[in-house]
Image (cartoon, rainbow, N blue to C red; front, side, top):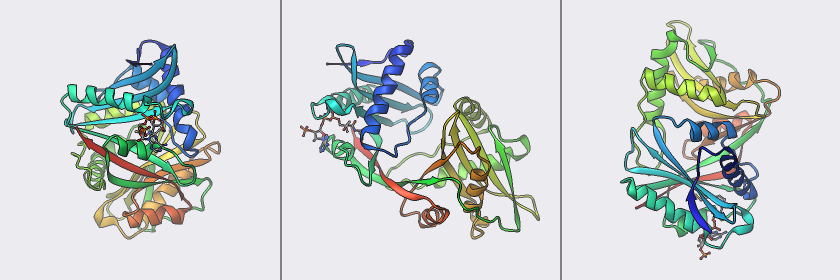
Length: 317
Ligand SMILES: CC(C)(COP(=O)(O)OP(=O)(O)OC[C@H]1O[C@@H](n2cnc3c(N)ncnc32)[C@H](O)[C@@H]1OP(=O)(O)O)[C@@H](O)C(=O)NCCC(=O)NCCS
């Protein structure tokens, strides 16, 4: 068995890498949300400027038995590397995961990174080895979130009469951009990360535009924003992604600015986004820290249920 770097110029090899990861993750995570093939293909063939990525694989006689991804942020968090390691079920407990992890650590250290982090999701019912593996590799939990799922349609949540909801898909309209950027940056600054110490991503118009353009290639990106009727001020937004052609979507940020809280805008914004989805989108995923009582309650009241625990783990290299 060899650990090798994926040749991202080879479409067959890219697909084999993706399929191995897909099979490994689905084996013990029936509710896993996997990155869509189109999005993985885009990052493999046209890398974006904000992260350097390497794809590794464990190969035996032409068969891909396990895969790992390494991501090195290039703008902030320059001490951090992120990884995910997956081994197909028939070849587990033979040291393949450890060999991939060791290769990831070597790459991360060579790039000068001093911390390696990852997300390990554990189904509430099906037993998997992901968390025990991470602990065996020396990683410690820094933060935990619940992964929740809802089947659509959900009963609509009302919009407070003092607000109206604007929606757009893809690029934020020019007139809303300054307020939208301010809310996105507030969200990034306030994002609860537990004991995981990270620099917040700071978006300017150029970086927002680049991200909107890239995301639109893989996803139908839907935004709902609350505007106070009497002064036109934007008080919150909610961001939803649906991979092109998929029957599911997932909730990204939902943020209500401090002076606009207490009007149940979070639930209303999510609800407007879900109501606008085509009928073929039947499930929505979201992640919320159990300690974020307000948002956790908002989600369960809307009809979401917890299906997995997601552990954010980190090892100091
Ligand atoms: C986690 C995963 C990558 C492990 O792959 P693997 O090839 O079986 O791992 P290894 O054989 O190298 O195991 C290394 C050590 O991890 C621990 N470990 C791995 N699987 C375990 C399990 N099911 N239960 C308990 N400990 C486990 C053990 O300490 C093991 O050492 P040992 O076999 O000498 O006891 C694999 O189960 C998988 O792909 N799971 C789904 C994806 C996932 O959860 N990845 C999270 C990691 S970022």
